[in-house]
Amino acid sequence: MIKEWENRTAILANLLNPAFCGEIIRRFIKAYNDKSDKQASFILCFIVLPILLHKETREQLPKTTNTHLLTWIDSKDALFIDFPSRVKNMKTYTKEALMFLLYQEAIIFNVEARIETTAFRKKRHNGEGTEEVDEIFKKAEFLGKWLTKAEDIKTLFSFLRITP
Image (cartoon, rainbow, N blue to C red; front, side, top):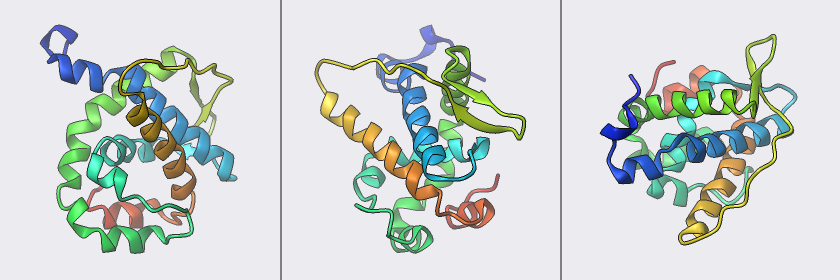
């Protein structure tokens, strides 16, 4: 169940607001779709926020997509010990972000139930802390490109210790 706004702490409301989380996911989807001959699947969206909003994991992402995804996950085992709980804790925020993107018509589901981005005009963000926001957005685009190399989602999820 999605927590009512008045029941959220200020930190949660700011960090995990649907517009911010939605923009992270939208950039992931766009990068994935631009790099791949197929569109992003709904299920992949649920690992984006747990990877990118976990600072330690985000900072240890490789520099290029040439790094083998499953080998990297295996070599960073300590980062993924609590990954199933991160996914579970972020599930509500991921759903909320996807609903926001659908409402804003920034994404659509095609006839194959895959996600496509629309011609959506991004708003510039200004103010304090924009360096970290820029880094998260950049890593979202990287992650989108990198996950196109995952041959099988079930295998990827198995390495991440989660089940679809």
